[in-house]
Image 1 (cartoon, helix red, strand yellow):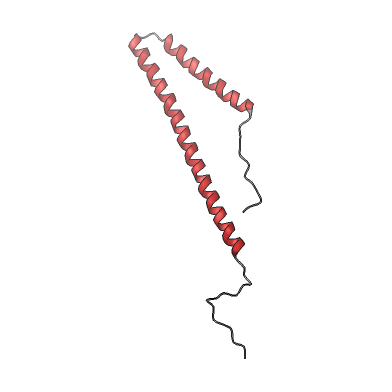
Image 2 (image 1 turned 180 degrees about the horizontal axis):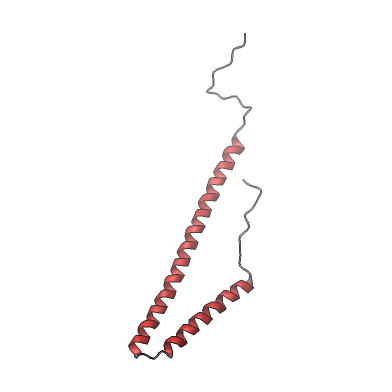
Length: 105
């Protein structure tokens, strides 16, 4: 196997906090905008449902993209392990049993 280990990329606490805060500010701004919109209640309700549907769709899309990326990394690791096994077992100085003997004059 390989002596190197892959480093798992992880977000810092500050980046995570910024992402959560940004999401909350955006959702709050949209909610306030819909609440104070000069329109009938059914129009505001429709917009609110549309925003919630958009948010859940974004979360689902992000998860699908992440899962596909992680699956690609696993396949890549398996292929790398197979290649390393083949290279470790290969001995260029070993005589092949299927090769005919060499006759010297």
